[in-house]
Image 1 (cartoon, helix red, strand yellow):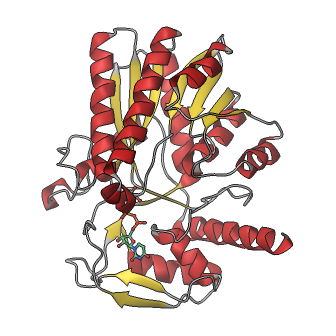
Image 2 (image 1 turned 90 degrees about the horizontal axis):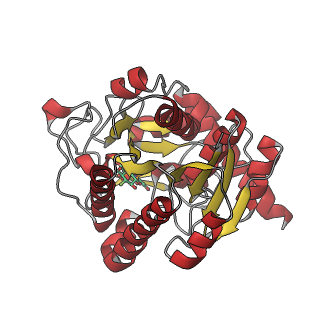
Length: 346
Ligand code: UFG
């Protein structure tokens, strides 16, 4: 039986946690990653956790020939999970062509190579960004909520990639896809051997929180306390990256083992919204570390509030995000401490 999964972007934040879960479930993997936003040490971390090194090839998915040469070497691939993409919203506004080229070319190459080599199943990393700011009656957001016009080139690439996959499915009866729309992934593996590796100054909340708590940044700026939310700060659905990784295994097994629809969409969230200030207080309580913060003006383009209705994933995938928030925040802090002790030794 074919038992190997191609994981593009498998050295990245969500990709690496997913590789761990896949390997621990008994799948073989091959990671294709150009390390543009990660590091080879991630592969070491995966090996330490699992006790076995995943196959890893340093190739850019935009490089069709090299990418296909990797795939040619494997005759046991049953599916692909496609993470490889650029993901910084702000950068995508400044460098739209880079985002369109990378995110769309990588997917086109992957789909064509899959077609050439008889690989029929793909799990795609999408995002709740496709919902934009849902109207109040669409909160919590189900998969039936309309996709709104994207607010950034990054968001638009997620729209376009979802559409490309749907078109490919319409044209090929044997092709199956699951689109996973992530809410806000946070935290790190409980071993503290893999986690998020932000490039430069973090844009996302949690890496900024942990770097501030560690003294690497003087204070966290809370972007706005005048939103129409109970404490005035923005609300998101923060999902533990390990729970998110497990959902990929559940999605994969559904595609491989169940006679499911050709394309299915799932929201991956907890179903619970937390404000920025709740995260700040939650972090302080979970870790006992004081977090200096200051309220500043709103960040351009921020959505006021969004959280998932994960009922479909809970019932159809038999998956649920269950890790308590304090445990997740503590895992993020332990990872930050791991990074600091590593940096001190160098
Ligand atoms: N925030 C701060 N201070 C910071 C960083 C963030 O107050 O220093 C706030 C933001 O204003 C927002 C919340 O923390 O209210 C979360 O911000 P993130 O940047 O962590 O996450 P976003 O929800 O803005 O964006 C995330 C992903 C995007 C994705 C989007 C929607 O980073 O890739 O969710 O799916 F497009």
